[in-house]
Length: 354
Length: 201
Ligand SMILES: Nc1ncnc2c1ncn2[C@@H]1O[C@H](COP(=O)(O)OP(=O)(O)OP(=O)(O)O)[C@@H](O)[C@H]1O
Ligand SMILES: [Mg+2]
Image (tube, rainbow over all chains, first blue to last red; front, side, top):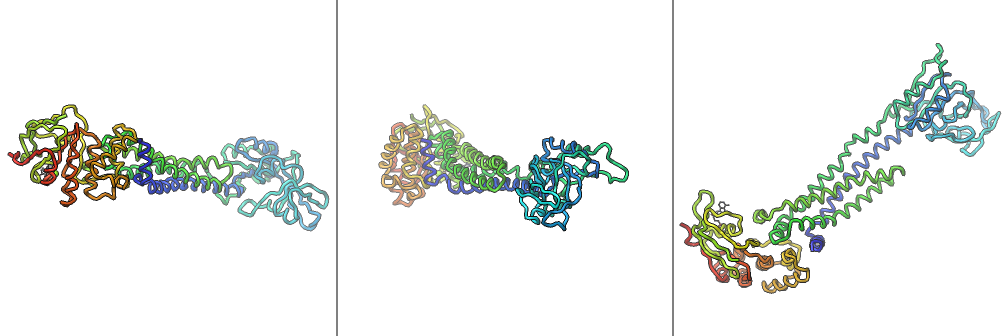
């Protein structure tokens, strides 16, 4: 009987399902998108920071880097790749014998720092995009030098976006010799103080001769700022309150829209309908607007998730569910509270207020 | 259950007495016309019978308690719900099966001459029809005390007559009906009279 009454109220428009659904869809999706897009803004900043190589730390000490200690940094949980680098004599390509190729000897872990991936790219040399383009190479080709040939294991991007110069047109030749190197590079996310400290300890004990420049720790690209505290930005974002606001606003909407029916509710109570039956009816009527709210919110969260990283889909959908759930809870509770607080004794007052 | 009034009198605060020394017994199955000039305290006495106002003196006893239903001067309902739904609601609340409630509501609509409007929305009713629906709904609630305040005061004489014509249908076993009115025709449609005139000290 309660369900049938609720259904009739929805059908004939007494419950104002359409307008309540429209308002609460705006509330749910509005607060949801506000938060999801704020979070997307943070991940975009992280992406830009990392794409620029601002997550690469460079510890330079000419002839003073221990390659084994440098490579060992890759064992840190936050470190993506680590490797040492040393300037070698220039080489010359068979097709362009007149132009020199700046060449670096690197430890096996080093290409990963530039490629952004862990591990050894395989046998052969690693060349920059500009060099590959100049020689018409791709990563499956063989590089013909005037005095040797070498397979191209990988091609790395090194745009001129503010990062340290010297590697834009260059070739990396992996080596296993353990002679001292000039610099140790580490790609890490998120950047940690502990790795920076360990990085300062990769010098050889014999390093530090009087004429060598003193060692320094720099960021490969400082154009994005020194630090990006993504977790802090996430934890302190203003829109973290969005679900709470959605709860409060929806509770207000649910309360107000039901309060408009106080005369009907008081009159029903006067005619013998119990408060609990009316509250149950209010909950059932809420389902009629809750369904479109949930559907709209699911679609908008899916749309946002589709535009983001594949790995973030679950987190995006989870975060995107909060404000709509809060909206539904708020609206349902607001309506139920409004129903429960109507007093039969106020019937005459409600009549006069009409 | 009869309602007994014993030396009931009332005044608001330190104001003048509206009426005093009202002693009577109201019997179920009767429809009492509660009359008196405007301001004589008709609505106030209905409030006292409803238990919403405590009389300044005297007492009201309603053996066995039970429900009191109030039919207000201005008809009110759910604009978009069908007329018959309004009558069904108290029947369903009392625990009747849906089919029984519908059948009984149909009977009541017939008695109050609303059969043709059963499936129309409440908002489509004229003032007289809406007032008759309020009376039918009041009876459907099966109260021990049905209080009707000025059912014809808002209506023109012709429309009021359609309401007066069904006042007799309010006579209902087990229900004391009191209709406050200052309309002579409405008064005459009732079975009994309860006059406040002359009860002012
Ligand atoms: N709550 C109240 N407080 C103070 N005075 C009141 C209150 N309610 C009614 N009165 C006064 O009591 C008197 C009787 O009012 P009541 O409404 O009972 O009269 P009535 O007989 O129903 O009149 P009418 O025919 O105009 O409806 C009026 O003078 C009114 O102003
Ligand atoms: Mg009155």
